Amino acid sequence: MYFTGYIAAILALILIALSLNVSRMRIKHKVSYGDGGVKPLTVAIRVHGNSLEQSLLFLFLLFFVEQAGQMSMAYWLGIGFVVVRLFYIWALLGKQHRVRQISHAVTLVIQLVAAITILLQTSS
Image (tube, rainbow, N blue to C red; front, side):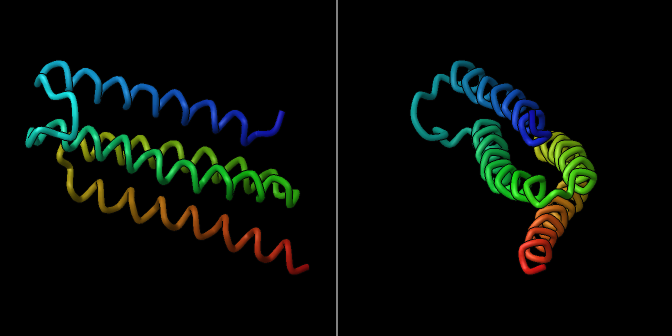
């Protein structure tokens, strides 16, 4: 099995937990559609949405890094991405603005490194 599959499974578990959190918040605040103007629900929806957006892009990148034969790079990028996303989720839910900014920046750096790795391997 490709390493990307393991990272995909871990990210899927995180996304499922975040989705369940949104459902829990909807039940708690009796909101079926949208966020109902409830700030904690808005935050939960954005944490889930942002995590999904970033994870999908990263999984594509990770797969192609792995296909380029960069297994060690794929390993460290994958582990790093999961750890950084967990910090991001914690920071956003816990209102830790500085940690959120840093973890988002590191997320982008990891994606950038993956993209550059793919381009360098493809061109050689």
